[in-house]
Image (cartoon, rainbow, N blue to C red):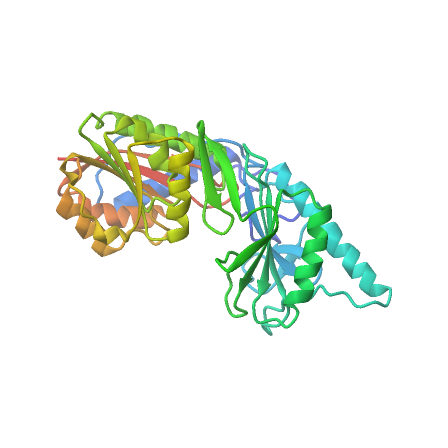
Length: 389
C-alpha cells in the first residue's frame, strides 16, 4: 500500500477522513475491490471490468455539518461520538464552505471574547453528554454552480434560550456573506442536523443548483448530492445507460426520486417520466423543478415505493434508495411489474450486492461502475445496470 503525507493537519485526530495517508490510486482500487468482493460474497456473476469514475481528490464537498463545541465549530474525533476537534478549514470542502466557516468561527470567537470581558454571551453550546445547551450544529452548504450559499444553525428545541439565540443569529446574518441563513430546531435527544421545523432569518430555506444545464431547486433541510462534479458524471453515465431502452413508448420511473434530479435530467429521452418519493418536501421541490425547466412529460408524486401501479412492461426504472437499500416490499413490487431495465444507484455496495440476488433470476447484470464521490474516505457509490432477460 503506497502511503503519502496527509494534506490536512487534523488528519488522524478528526474522524471525517480516513484515507488521506493512502495514495489516491490505491484508494480507488480499494473501493473497486470492495464492490468486486461484495458481488463474489453474494454469488453475483460478473466477468466484465468494473468502470471507475473519479474527480477532484480534495475541495469537492458542497455541504459540511459542523458540531458546535465549546471551542467553536468542530468535527467528531476519530471513533469518538462525544469528543470533538475544533477546525478552521476542511480540505475536502469547497473553498466557499471554508470561507463561510471562517465567518462563523470569527463570530463565535468574538462572542467568546465578549464574554471574557465580563459580559454575558448568549451563545450557549450544546453539551452532548448532559443534553443541555442551545447551539447544536452549524450546517454550511455552498453549491458549485449557484450563489445560494446557506448557513443553517441547528438549535435545541427544548432550550429556554431560543429567543436569545434567534436574535444573535439574526445579527450575524446581517454581516455574513451567505445568501441564506436558516434556523432549524431539533429535539435535545435527537442527533440530527436538518429539520422541517425551520425558518429563514435571511434569504430562503430553498437552494438552487445547475446540473448538466438543468435548474434544480432543493431544500436546505433535505438530502442533495455533496459532490456536484461527480453527480454530473453519474447523470451522464445513466443517460448513456438508458438510451438503449428508450423509445416513444417507454416511460421512466425515478424511484426514491428526491427533488427529481435524475428524472428531470433524463425525461427528454422518454415518452413519460414519473418521479416518486415518499417525502412531501422533496416532491414539492420536484414539482418546482419540472416547472422551472419547462418539462411537459413529467409528473412528481408523493408515494411509497411499494405502491407503484404503473404498467412497467415498457418502463425503465432508476432507483436511488437510502443506505439501507430498498425494502423487501419494494423489491417484490418491482419483480411483479418487471420493467425492461433497472438502473440501481447505491451508496452501500454490500447492500446492493445482497439485493441483486433477488433480481438475478429475471435480470442480467449488464454493467456495474464505481463513482468516487467521497475521496479520502471509505464511502463508495456504485451504479448497476440490470436488463430484463
